[in-house]
Image 1 (tube, rainbow, N blue to C red):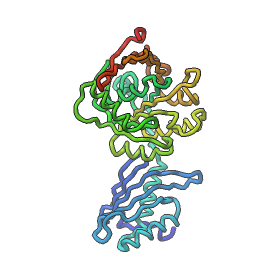
Image 2 (cartoon, one colour; image 1 turned 90 degrees about the horizontal axis):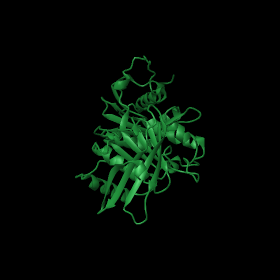
Image 3 (spheres, rainbow, N blue to C red; image 1 turned 135 degrees about the vertical axis):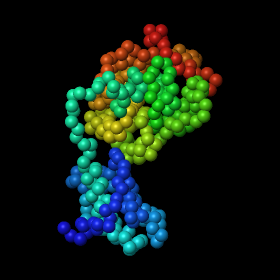
Image 4 (cartoon, rainbow, N blue to C red; image 1 turned 45 degrees about the vertical axis):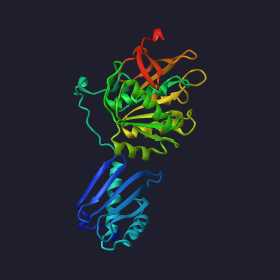
Length: 348
């Protein structure tokens, strides 16, 4: 082992924090800290990440360096350490970069720890729902239907209820920090819709829903999404819609599984909006249905020139619960607001 591979002992006082591929490392006695994100492991087992190094030292205060670092490459580590030393030669930057790389690679490859299943869990005590009976805790729910069937309106309504923790229409709502990922519209339209829904609920003040316009596939942009989830402690994410989020042929099992794998890696509750094919079935690969834990088919009823929209949610798949009877809702648009009410599906 050469000298570059042996970090000096004065670098041992380290604080390592973070999760899900976003980490911070602080060298407490050096007044140096780093941020690591966008970690990828290549097919030949190289681990690469974006690395920022900052200093609070008087002679080098501020951002010291930023790079796409190959943490498993000696030459890449040496090159980054050399560039840092040009800013501040009093720090053992080789040791800093080597230790940083070792910690991140070990954490990244370690993944989730294995745990023993005792078989003695108190099943009734386990929290199963974020929004009962629609959104299971830390699992994906998928709602699909034709265009303009009211799917997005309903998703936005749930976003407002979750943000407020407001109990409405016999839905069991858990207060949540919400992130809305939008491939379909823009912040102007979403902002208007949230405003109309909040007015219909009689809510004052500002919402705390976070919004991000998406232009890439979910798997391609998952690191920025993960950063938002960590920064804002997101517990409920809405995908609108899955066809665009796949960023490829939705009939492809590989494309669909990649998108769901990225979503699963976030480890939070999610609602996915999707569309039907010409036959009225869920569009694309069967892996959409198998990857979601709950699946609902959304259908609408609306007359011309009517300010009312009736929608029905028909339960097509359930994991960890029974299939339920159809859920009916009525949306009324008037005076710059929208109100929701429960309806018997037979009456819509």
